[in-house]
Amino acid sequence: MTPKHHGMLEIHIAVLLFGLAGLFGKLLTLPALVIVFGRTLFASLTLGAILFCSSIPLRTESRQDLAVLILLGALLAVHWTTFFHAIQISTVAVGLLSFSTFPLFVTFMEPFFFKEKLRLFDILFAGSVLLGLVLVVPSFDFQNNITQGACWGTISGLTFAVLSVLNRKYVSTYLPMVIVCYQNWIATVLLLPFLISKDWHLRPADFAWLAILGIFCTALAHVLFIRSLVHVKAQLASVIACLEPLYGIIFALVLFGEVPALRTILGGGIILGTIILATIKRNSSRTK
Image 1: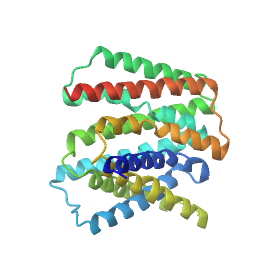
Image 2: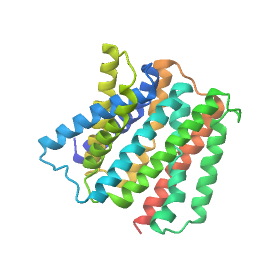
Image 3: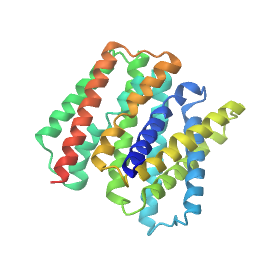
């Protein structure tokens, strides 16, 4: 196997693992906060062990960087909690597709943070994503569980967009794996006070699922994705990453029998198609 083929295999496995993460919102009957705590705990322990064995330091260069990382960890906790809550009250497809609207928010945040000009294409892109989201939402009745799930998924996308923009602006000088380790560790610490006040009864199976979620669908997925970028171009990697919702929806169909409604399929197709086209256009314009 050539290095390029090996990189392609790594990135597809990584995106598949990321896509599978949403299924744990259905596999586990635990509250979203507990799921996220387990995920970040196992992920931070695994990533910390990898960094320690690789002799990669975890020190921050300044207190300002540490403060930003704490903020990013808090955003990660909110992002994943709203993501799993969206899936628990609706479906895997709705949770994944509504979260996938995060590039819409990034489009309007980047001109503010980086003084980048908002183009006509960006406005058309935003309109197309909004159209897809409207199709995913069955009605604007907030008593509808699917509508509620889409709202929580969109909030998850918004927090992920803020997380991505702040990552790019403030801590891009650190290794990605170091940033991810810090964010998971801080999220674990911040979530702990919300959990110790209650008596949670976890079965052995719950521990096993949480370990799989944290170790494989989070830590290993990040390691494989980062490693694949050595041999896979950033543009192609960005497009492949857009397959995450598709992988999750397919496995939800196979494992849980969740068949998305026709309008969900149409809306999801518009959202994913628009994001893929926008990703290709944005990356090609940056290379000029």
